[in-house]
Length: 395
Image (cartoon, rainbow, N blue to C red; front, side):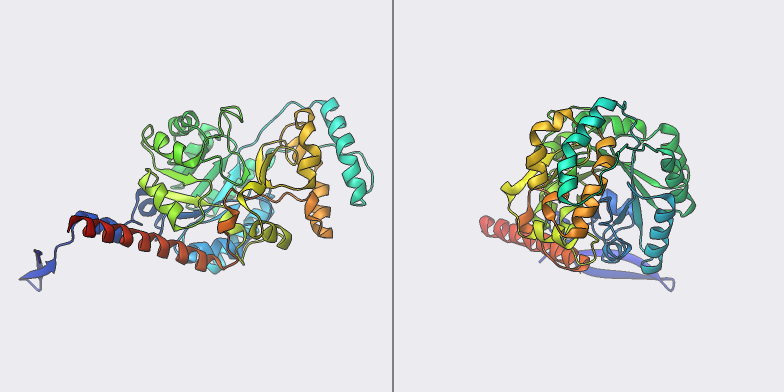
């Protein structure tokens, strides 16, 4: 057996310590979780919980993920500044570990009155099914909250701010970085990843087409940006210098290990955390994921005006042929808000947005800590299995 000798000083005496030599391959197995991302963000494991908006990322979930060694993320996309402040304070009460805030980059689409009228016409039968009182539904576009959200992140010294639906203005990025906040962007193509790096982002979440919820595309058309995670990660990793965070269809340790081998420095998991016990997702949403299979998800823009993947239901099927007639995000999102809320209240999943990635068979109804521990355990067992096979092949 090979040994190494290390020299050290203690009480002004030279100590010689003999220890077993650890081959480079074995060191990787022992230190797989020590990446650029974990070192920069002071994490135990390279696992980030996606900042899913709409109430899923409760303070309990965010704190539980961070306490278990990952990075919990508040999904603040739809939050008022007051609600964001409240959520941050609750997370701080339950964890002293790093966590982040995800924000939506504001969009200012052209409001076409004919599109709004057509959307209301198409949505009216659904409103009637749910007993929603007929009234004129006009979307209210308000981007003023974004700057307030940024200031709340800075004031509370949140260590990480991530962004979806584009790249924030350069002055926002610089302001965050001047306050020692790590800034993470989102990309769905190599081109979008390069744009994020050029804008000054510290890291990039690279979202494959398998991901649940909204597509993060901003520079390419929807069709052009539907690239799978396995194809996308190595191509982005080869073309940018900042750390890549893999996302899309990653539910367990096998997905984590594959992502790291492909060049990612961490993973971001969304659907896997939706079904956790601390998640704020509606119970019907959790059950829909837990009882679905890979062919039962569909991409639709009918709920929000922006393509998103979820469990297929009557709303998606009913609106499929009319998607091109609907107004863009966030106008359509505002128009369907009362439908989604009332459907959840009445327990009618056929009219709810049930966001879900392409791996629902791998979902579990466990605590966030149990999920993270099972992911880590599977990574380490997989690595040991690979090492065992290598040793046997060399005999």
